[in-house]
Amino acid sequence: VLYPERLIPGGIDAYCAMMEAECSSRGFEALRWTQFMRDHAEAYRVSEEAAVQMITEYMVRWEAFQGEIAHDKPNKARALDLARTHILMRAAEGRVLVEVFGTMLVLSTETRALQRYDNLVVPRCDYCGHDWMPKYPHRMESLTGKLKD
Image (cartoon, one colour):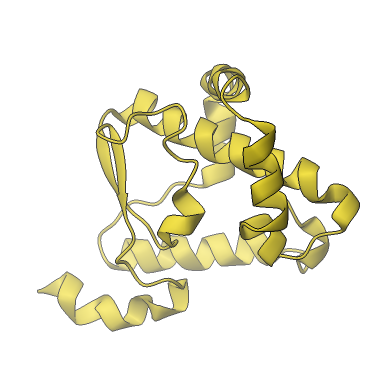
């Protein structure tokens, strides 16, 4: 978690339980992201090493001072470290998913701007994302009729 100070104790567990229930009620299977990445720690480590070789200082500085990390307004002293961590995580996670599940289409609840590093070490044709899903989980209720039809 990049910003643990923002979390209410137990907040992540409550959020995950709510999302698992929402998905389950609609016939979807949910997995806990942190546990999934822990279960595939070796693949994650290898993916991270590949991403380290591709990250430039320009990317890190841009992410820290203009990108999503900048929008979160972190402590300036931590901004570069947070940006590098963010880029590494996005790149490594995409590669682990493709390694475990194969080629896929990602229907994201995040904007394309947040997905900018997903294809750093994974070809877009193997891990392509679309961001037309609702941007916040509480908006899933608006999909109820569409998912049941």
